[in-house]
Length: 187
Image 1 (cartoon, rainbow, N blue to C red):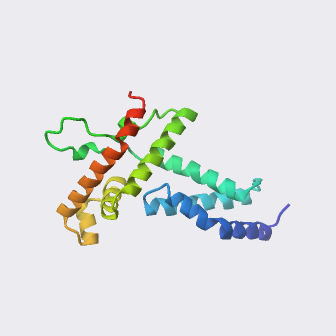
Image 2: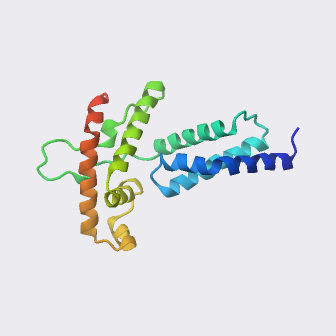
Image 3: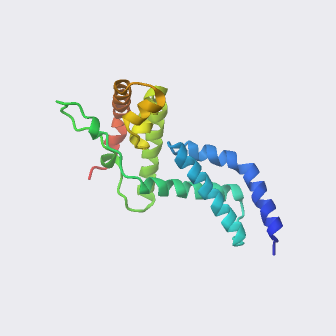
C-alpha cells in the first residue's frame, strides 16, 4: 500500500511532466480561456482523486488525455447551440447556416461521436483560418456570449467595427463550412 507521501510524489511528477501538454491539448479544442482553465483543473482534480482512491492508472498521460477528451465532450454537450441565423441579411434568399442544422443526432454511439468530432475539427479549422480580429470578436460574442458593448469597452474598438468584423467572420465560416454541411444527414 502506498503512503500519502508516495502518492503526492507521483502526483507532482505527473503534473510536472504532463500539465503543459494537457493545457495545450485542451486549448486546441476549447475556444474559451476560462473553459480551458476549468477543464485543466477538473482533469487534475480527477487525477488527485484517482490516486487518493488508489485507482490503478497504468499510463498517466493516456489517462489524463482520455479524461480531458471526456470533459471536453461534456462541456460541448452542456452548451446551447450557437446560431448564425441572427446575422442573416435582409433579403437573403438562402437559409443561414445554423449549428443545430449541422450537428448530428444527440444520440450516443460511435457514428454520432465521429460526426461530432469531424464537425468540431472543421469548426476549429474554420476559426483558425479567420483573421485574428474577426476570430476574436466572433469567439467573444458567439462562443463566450459577451455583448458588443462589453467587447467595445474592453478593447476600445467601436461597436460598428466589431459588428463588421463579426459579419465578415460569419460569412467566411459559412463559406468554409458549406461543403461539410452538405455531407451531414438532414433531419
